Amino acid sequence: MGERVEEHLKAHGVTLHLGASVERLRGDDAGRVEAVVCEDGDLAVDAAMVGIGLRPNSDLVADAVDLGETGAIAVDDYGRTSADGVYAAGDCAEIDHVVTGEPTWNTLGLPANRAGRAIGQTVAGDPEPIGTVADTSVVKAFDLECGRAGVTDLDVARDAGFDPVSETITAGSRSGYYPGSAETTVTLVADRDTGRLLGGTIVGADRAAVRIDTVATALASELTVAEVERLDLGYAPPFSPVWDPILTAAKVLRGSL
Amino acid sequence: MGERVEEHLKAHGVTLHLGASVERLRGDDAGRVEAVVCEDGDLAVDAAMVGIGLRPNSDLVADAVDLGETGAIAVDDYGRTSADGVYAAGDCAEIDHVVTGEPTWNTLGLPANRAGRAIGQTVAGDPEPIGTVADTSVVKAFDLECGRAGVTDLDVARDAGFDPVSETITAGSRSGYYPGSAETTVTLVADRDTGRLLGGTIVGADRAAVRIDTVATALASELTVAEVERLDLGYAPPFSPVWDPILTAAKVLRGSL
Image 1 (cartoon, rainbow over the protein chains, first blue to last red):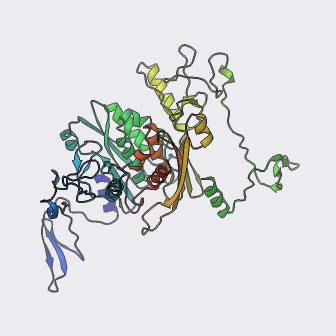
Image 2 (cartoon, chains in turn green, brown):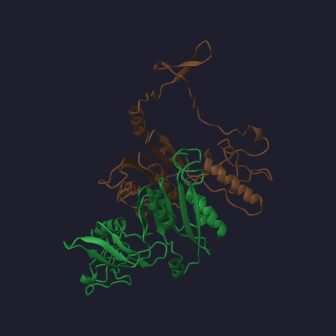
Image 3 (cartoon, rainbow over the protein chains, first blue to last red):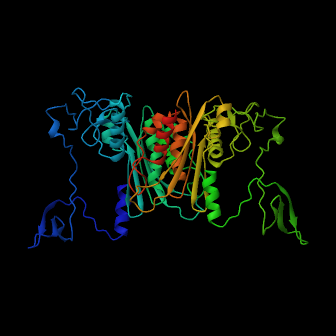
């Protein structure tokens, strides 16, 4: 996925300096940033955005409730913390990962929104689990759509006790003869012993991102790659080849298992 | 879904004569069609397309293999017919429906292609089931995308032993503030006793059709509506509201259950 995004950004005139350590930001006399000083030289800029990762802001409550290994607030399936009558949801709290079963820290909108609603319902007397996350996320780079769900890093999969196998395919997003087909690249990861799907990524310019929902749904159901290959996904020439790229990826991955 | 399609066709200048019995096609002296003669009068036309449904063309083999109640060739999970060593796949054969569990007749490309491949593999000594169908289908009417999967007709659901409940919602396809959001209408049907999702339809102009794959995948896993509501589907403003329209429909339907 990263390679496709890199190509696409370059084709749109974006210059990338990957893996180049940033030494400092240099400002002009008015205190306005004018350059990023890095290994690759002084890069003149109009603005700088700094992305250095995220950390749960849980210090405030660290004395009141137990934190998990992620540094976020530990909660049970209903969002209950270690303190009686205190619940936590969203970016401050952990939530279980649907593939590993382990508490994870997810900072995305839907799980936070859903957990908050579930806790509201639970507090009101109708217990509702906060659910799990597949760490599903979708993003757009110009007109290139990217999606990911589940465990796609092989080291993470091994740490979780799986023996991961991965395959990547590229297929058209529509029937070959139908205008508008775009190369769609799908990577799927599965466990060799059980055949269980562990995660996947997708990238392409034609309705690629939304297709990751198929992977997210399959993960929630603990489907095997063979079961994914047999899904009755929609086919019509404007929307998909006969075998959706995700089905093709499942077929190829199953061969490798 | 039909109402949305009807509106959309009319907005594009298509005149519909629904439920009007056709008496005959009238031709000119050269034998070329010039009018459809129906209850609503004589409709001048340049061409006529006749859609009168489909029927499996199984007469050829009716003496050799057992036919099912649908009129297509009866097969087992591996495509085996009643005749030893004879397999059948595709438009001539039945295949089990994932929701009802009953043999059904599906004339779409993916199930035929998949069943043919599975039989090839089985015959070659590595038995592979032909799978099931959700009768998933997607279609385009100008720029309006439609999808359906599973059992969406309440009478069909009742005949299959379910107590169906249905809800329809309309939601944006993207975050409200993001350009390009399109009204997306989702209908979901579930069984009142078990909460099991039975089927769904979706219609909208922005990536609607592909979203039906979430329903198809949920059906293959026999998910309940509560489980669908808790799916970690992808969210980013260009692709979806925080709650994907399918999740919103699941939430509303769950309320009705």
